[in-house]
Length: 109
Length: 115
Image (cartoon, rainbow over all chains, first blue to last red; front, side):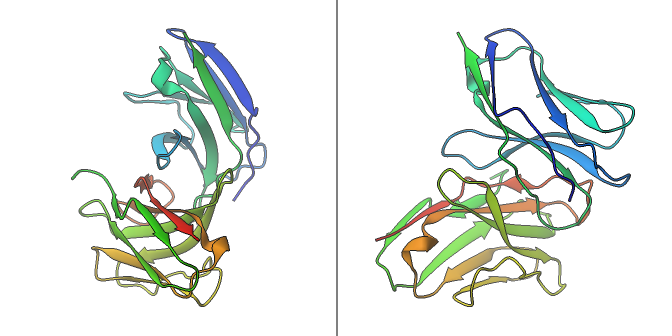
């Protein structure tokens, strides 16, 4: 699976949009971009995934660049409950997810 | 329930004892995965089941670890002769069908502490 690069930490004010970047410059054509988050003491929570096109669901939006070498997860109106570690993962295989160190996002009141 | 259910949520046991951890996947999910997460670290893949195919056991750290799954239902992860380095959160995930485009959904894990 391709490696991803994320900033180790970010801060965002409550109510503002949180934009989390991810670089995946070696991504292959058949690899999807997945985003998960993990809140302390809980299992990872699936947020969103995409292949080429931008995606939106009730939790977030995913913007993938045209060359697919980077993506941005957008939480449109961050709340204190969005404080978590966010993981960007690229995956084509059918088996395991490989989690890196992620971005520790802190939402400030 | 709607999500992946794991039990027990916490387990404390003495070194050398055997432990059994249980995972109930989301109904209809044919793929099931076990991961381990040590304190402050990322997820470590252990084993993967897909339908009636032979499981992928490539992540099991030693022969003290084994897992079973009956059909497309419950799975159990067994650790024999536990060691202190086995202390971790053991996470189970399931997905609808095998494939890169299907997200895995996780339970909240079993926190295992070996004294």
